[in-house]
Length: 286
Image 1 (cartoon, rainbow, N blue to C red):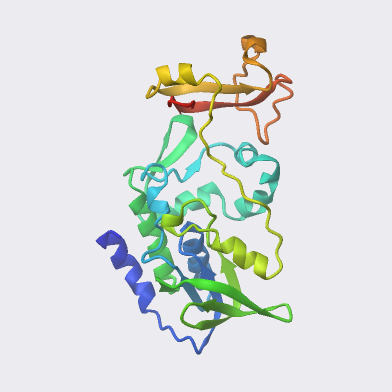
Image 2: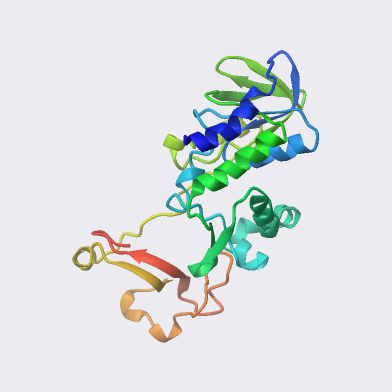
């Protein structure tokens, strides 16, 4: 962890911590969501403790956007949510309460100016994810949320349908409410090991099977792919069709984003997905 970030979150670690006392809110997970949740709850007057199992908060955030932190996009709300597929509608309420503009304003208040790049992607002007993490840590600390790192939460205690607190490797923390912000199962080295799914399931929540969302594509024509290995392209459109390659009608390649929550069938029955962006050839495909 960079020294600058550590200075900002050390204050949060100094907030009085006593496992014998009851907290209003315990937040599990010190990523972007956990830091925001802890800071906001404390800002509203709750006694908050944020528990992070890694040595420092925000490890995955520091890697996002190739360490530059692609923190949002300028798409309008409907199009933005459509990118999450058919289940994306659950985001409407959250993004109405705390919009992209609210996020950018909050970051600006902590000195993080932003810029828009190709494809409508929003990055900090500094191109440094550390600046975004520093802002979130300051927000949580200045709101007087407590922070404990190197604490592995093992489960959420519930009795008669009521939250009682959380269990860690070392102790039990009593709490009236728990925010589960443990992340997914995408990057174990950053702490995202799927613990949150297990904790949710253990107290009765239904957890759907998880699948990779960002994956490479293996093509049948590996010989052709290998001959182009290493070629990197920008500002290209990639369209996938539900038919053999010799049946593709190139005149029907859409000029707009389709797929997931954006109906492709209105463009052409065979179009599965079409996206504009960057692409790299590998020895096995894309």
